[in-house]
Image (cartoon, rainbow, N blue to C red; front, side, top):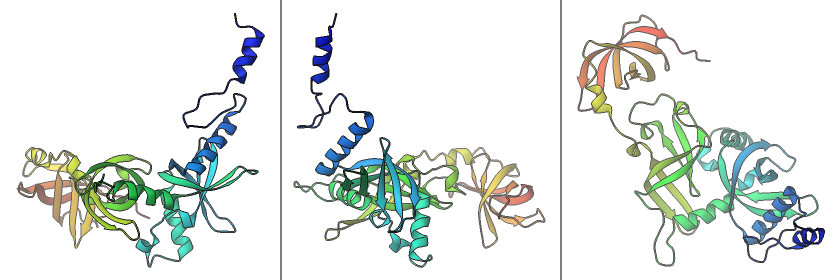
Length: 311
């Protein structure tokens, strides 16, 4: 049986920690342990990851908010690496910043701690520095002249924003958008129906442009080559003069692009529903011709089943 002396002795023993020359007092509570870890991370400049939980306006400018093991960490907008040059002409700077960050809330991001306040236990971090460090590690040649990511590489990426026509990804410190036609073999009317912020997906690097002076990386990527393309198999089950339910994914110059319920892509040049059509409408689609070379069913829209309510 353990006596009182043994218990006291055990409480006095230092805890063996993962990081060298580190120590944790057994009496420390969880918050103290996390603060101790953040101090070590600040000293070693290690990259951490957390979910972007919110955005706040302050007197000094906007800040992104993340929580690492329950501890609040702020990232100034200037350190968020928002790629505002891609948003040129879309309103004033502040509104653009707020719009981009709001779209990113819920995504996982990397950051490096750049300032600590010992008394207030406040932490300031930089996503910009963390992304630069990741780009240097994964895209630029090492001492042996090897790169970890190159054209054709299959990589896991983070979805940091999702729109109707595209998603935006963070690929090891480099961001890029992937448009709907590169996300799926079938016609995707709204990327938000299949992807969400914070998701991790697989992608293929299509092209990389490096700038060794600025350590910037221009990247293009796609997803659909990793997915099974069974459109040809499915279109063989589609019958001429057959009528199928479908959803209009796009309308261009009067031509309707329809994703049929039998998972076949359809094009309709004629509308016999006697009502204007809109994107997202559920319709009846009658097949008049099958183009197996382009893997598309041609036909006409005969009825509107349900109109999409648009604001």
